Image (cartoon, rainbow over all chains, first blue to last red; front, top):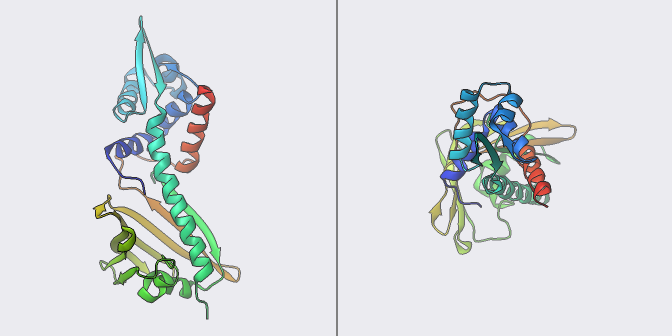
Amino acid sequence: MVKYDDGLDGAATALAHRGRRQIISRLGAGSATSSELAELLDIGLPALHKHLDLLRRASLIESSKTGRTVSHVLRPAGLDQLADWLLTRKSFWSNQFDALADHLETS
Amino acid sequence: MNPIQLTMTRTFNATAEQLWRAWTTEDGLATWWWHTWPDTRYQVDATVGGSYRIDAADHGIGVRGVFLELTPPQRLVFSWIWIEDGAEGESERVAVTFTPDGDGTRIDLLHTGPWTSAEPVDAYRQGWDFVLDALEHTTDSVM
């Protein structure tokens, strides 16, 4: 099973919010500026920055500034950990269910 | 509900009582859990607050935990600590329900991680679908 560490906790907590999941989904299609994300979520920049901070601390996104424009990109490695957590458990329980179906004594 | 959780559903050709025994007794577990490893040790105290421990020491893996809820034969909730080569993971949580389904019984399993969120969580797609979709888009944009 995947080893649990703080990165996983940060990522899962960051994703336990609809708006932040919207940001991740949007960034999955390519980079976006702060204004674009604020418009997408229909929130002001201060509120957006709170979410972006959380996502950055969880190592899910990276931000960079060009002139006065700040843009953000997804860090797939952050999601990889979560996917791994889900994949290992899905595969484990799938095998367990197979074993249960094959070996359950119903007499 | 945290979206990062695993759910699994399957219907078995057995009664809920038979499945309950298979999940909550040492003899029951031994018939299927790690049946390919006959030296596996099973210790189960199926009471609320009671502990369980399944050890395949020869293979360096095991799992232990505590029963949090027991409503025979419908619902079973227990903590889940994976042990690998002596190192223990964080405590996770597994909830299993047994529901009559035609001539058999449907098991719904929910495995959640140890994280908690202070944010109000709204209903959304399963974390599994979400993460896979996001990864798929990322792969597409990288290619």
